[in-house]
Length: 455
Figure 1 (tube, rainbow, N blue to C red):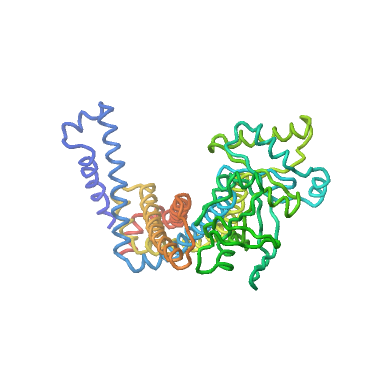
Figure 2 (figure 1 turned 120 degrees about the horizontal axis):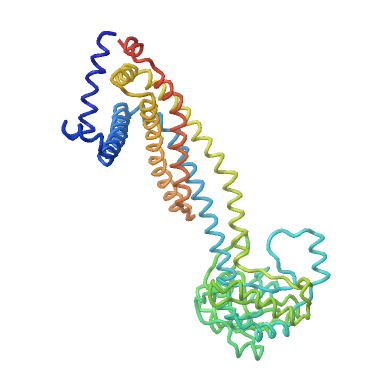
C-alpha cells in the first residue's frame, strides 16, 4: 500500500494540469500571462465548489430516509420560527387595522386627558389638576387657525341605556359628532347617510345607528326614517353604520351618532374632543404641530410651559403596537430557535457517522493531493446544504400551517421576508457549525491510516 501511494500522487499531476489548461502549449506559456493564470485559478475555484456541491447532493440523496430523519428537527425548528413570526406579524396587522378603523388614517385627537401608553398615578393626578376642559370655542379656534389641517371636527361621548317598546339595550355609547367626523375617522355608512352640517347647526334630533343597535330595535326591516328614543327623546334614524366588529372586548357596533350640538344639550358640556386629519401622510407631523400650536396660542401658554391638554395620534399608537409585538417576538422567537439547535446536534451526529463511513474516500482524496482545507470545506458544504434543504422544507411546512390556520380560524397570518431569511440563515449557520467538528476530524485523517483502516 505504501509503495502505491507515490504512483497515485504522480497520476494526480496530469489531472490537475489538464483542468487548468487546454493544451501543453498554453500551459507552457501561461506562467508568464497573469490574465491566463487568474482565469485558471478562477476555473479551479469554481470547479472545486461545483464538485463539492455535487458530491454533497449525491451523499444526501444516497441515504434519503436517513437524511429526512436527520432533518426533522431542522424542519420543525424552521417551521416554528416562521409560523410564530407569521402569527406576530398577523397580530400586528390585525391591531393596526382595528386602530385605523376606529381612528381613521392620518388622524389625531386633542382632549383634556388624552394620552397613549402608560402613565403613573402621580402624573395623571398632576395633569388632571392642570389640564383645562375643552369647549366649543377651542374647537372653533383650531378649526379656523390650523391652516395645514385637511379637516377639524368635534366629538363627545356618553353612555346610555336604551329602552323602547319593551326592548332594552344597556351600555350603548352615544357620540355627538360634527358632520365631517365621517371623513376624519373613515366611517362607512351601510344604509342612509351621516349627519349633515345643517343638522349640527340647528341641533336636529337625528341619529346614525351601529349595526348591533339596528338589529336589536329594527330587525329584518329598514331602519331609515324610523324613530329611536335616546334618554326619552325621539331621534329619527338617518343612517346605519357598516358592521365593524369589536376590539379588545369593545364593540364598535354599539355606537349611536347624533349631532354634537344636540349631544351637548342632552348630556351637558363634558369631555369635548377635537379631531383632525392631515392632507397626506408626509404632512401628518407638521399638521399635528400646527394644531397643537394653535390651541397653545388660544390658551395663552408661554414657550416653556407644557401643554394643558392631551394629544394622541395614529402614528404613536402604531409605534406602540410595533413595540408591543416586537417585545413578544424577542421573547418567543429565541425559544423556538432552541429547536433548531437540537436539530443541529442531530446533524452533527449524522456527519460524524458520515465521516466514519467515508474514511476510505477521505484517505484516497488526500493521497492524490487534496488539502486539509479542501476536505474541511467539503464536509462543511455538505452539512450546510443538508440544513439549508431542511430550511426549505420547513418553510413549505410553515406555509401550509399558516394557510390552514387562516382558512379555519379566519386569522390573517403574514409570512414576512425577514423571518424567512432568519430561518434559512440560522438553519444554514447551525448546519455549518454542526459540521465543523466532523469536518475537522475528517481533515485531520492521515491518508495512509485512513486507507489502511478502510481496508
